[in-house]
View 1: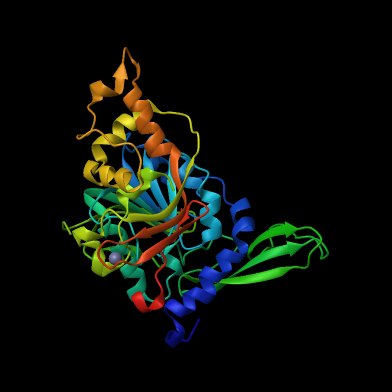
View 2: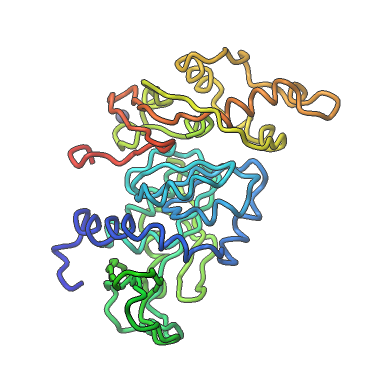
Length: 242
Length: 130
Ligand SMILES: [Zn+2]
């Protein structure tokens, strides 16, 4: 991104929120398989637990455990309406920095591939604080963010690369040549009878240790943390009763 | 949004969240819809102790729905001969099948109104409130 002065709420509106709103249904059609660590976190919850899925997207994680109650939220109303189908859960449109969920009340929260869309350290920490504030003292939050260290992925970023990047989302039109497998630099979806259209989303790529540092900076405690397939993840708990 | 949801939500404004007057939100001009879903008796039993019952009673009164029992129904009241009781069925209908399809949710503290459209409440704040 380069220009830090541009970062902030308005920047995210243009480079994150408006993009997801436009690519919602195509994005959703590519997001259906839950990740193992997230699936296990949700499956191990006692029946009757109540929680949040902040930035729930199409709601693929709402489908994992029908014995808990999740109030999902997403910034995109188009994605929220797709997520609405998953019983017994609920979905609202909300911003991660202004969640309507009651403070100090929930047993768990997940926020998968969301915090990295905030464009300053301060705002990313505020987002994590916002998540932890909704938890009861024994509550747990599972947070996933994209890693800078993605040496093995097709994107090929690694340590030393720029952390603030624009990642293309290509809606592939059938009028153009076929996608060559393995060479694609971005997510791609084929839409028949239309031209290619490329959208760019802003990401902050987390480096090793950065997610843990952000959690601790807002008074959270790390319960467990790790790396899984191009992502850093952490299970955090609130340190103090708020 | 199903009525159960409202037991977990407050005003999205930081200045309101810690204020008791911001919970529960008050429905206004609400269009209700019944959406039939399969009953999960265990889910109802597990979720009941987590509910703020006073807030549930306030909500049903404000929506003009039949009055709820004075206290949270006990486990014994939820089953008769191992089958879900009428109380359990009524709670399933109220919490899981009754949904605000459109209308507004009003904060009792700041009086801000959040719109509900096509069954989804929108808590995005106008920029001057953030
Ligand atoms: Zn308010």
